[in-house]
Amino acid sequence: MARTKIDFSVPDLTGRRVVITGASDGMGLIMATRLAGAGAELILPVRNAAKGDRAIAQIRRSHPGATVSLRTLDLSSLASVAALGDTFRGEGDPIHVLINNAGVMRPPNRQLTADGFEVQFGTNHLGHFALVGHLLPLLRAGRARVTSQISIAARRGTINWDDLNGDRSYNVMRAYSQSKIAFGLFGLELQRRSEAQGWGITSNLSHPGVAPTNLLGARPEIGRSQTMPQYRLIQGLSSRGILLGTAETAGLPALMAATGPDAVPGGLYGPSGPGNLGGRPAEQRLYPPLRSAEDAARVWDVSERLAKAPFAASA
Image (cartoon, rainbow, N blue to C red; front, side, top):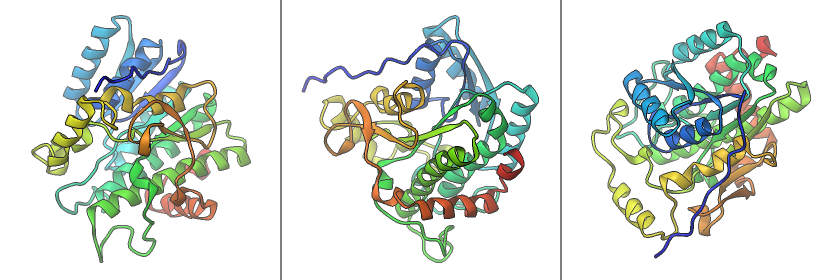
């Protein structure tokens, strides 16, 4: 089946400082390349410096004049997040766009972060929550747009408030959904608090649909040595243009949310095809688990306590 060309025109970002997590490979690297091509001063916080160097080399092959650099970040370690915050605040430059794109999915067994949190909740949500807290003064100075990448897994499920870590009962996919629901609620609450407290930040959400990205690939850092079986099916459907997106199109909703002049604060952007699995990027209705402002405020309060993020001091 012939695939219809799908794209989004990233506006001129000259003079804009853009930070994107999870951009050392896969969909994140494709997004970073587009941002660099639009003239952004691009910063890639990465866990693996060698992969980061290869990513920069690839970006510069496409855009020889790109302004792009690395910083060190392990989102599964709150100490690493705090250290990056110190680095950025020491540099003192405003941040204009932050794309919270990094994430982990379906480790082969239940794992904990360096701080004792279930690895998906701790990395996908708490790590990014803490990052925004540490960067808040710079985000405010840049009147930044913050885009947080969630997942269609947030369409259903709940937050197990009494067992966030899955200590008593653990299911890897429920834990993944919980991490993305919490992360989405945080992104929406960030918009509410920015409006209420005059932070000048706009916050919205995106999701990539389903595409053959590196989330299902080999991930040695979480103990997965081989590509997951589902990847082959997803890749096959994607290559034939059946329902699903590609690694290139999967990042377009985040680019629209983060840079589109008409992107709505508090909005959700994703593929607009059947089931929102693939297709052109567009605004979408919030998933039911994301619609409770009470849940969003509760996520914020719990996360601020767990992550020890300095929102109160930064505000």
